[in-house]
Image (cartoon, rainbow, N blue to C red; front, side):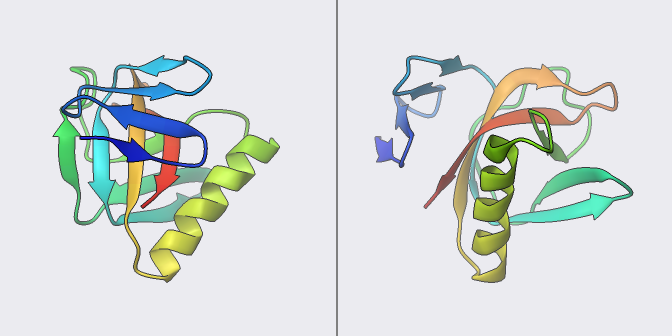
Length: 115
């Protein structure tokens, strides 16, 4: 199965995401509707109707996801805009995890691709 996004290519049977730059992500892969919301100053991503193509890492203890990166960067803002646009327009996205988690057990997401 191959999905092509603006910046990334998803390959295999959901076992990995490889960016065109060659960056490889080994975390969970989620395809579906994702609800972005802020709790305090922290952005959380809540899978609403995901199809989990690849299981999350063992460190993931909660059903919440978090974007990696600095919230003031253009990259973070662009990813948030894609997520918010998809949520408001009832569209699905493809998310790829890093294989890492926060101290609370939320999987860290590096790749956001509109579907």
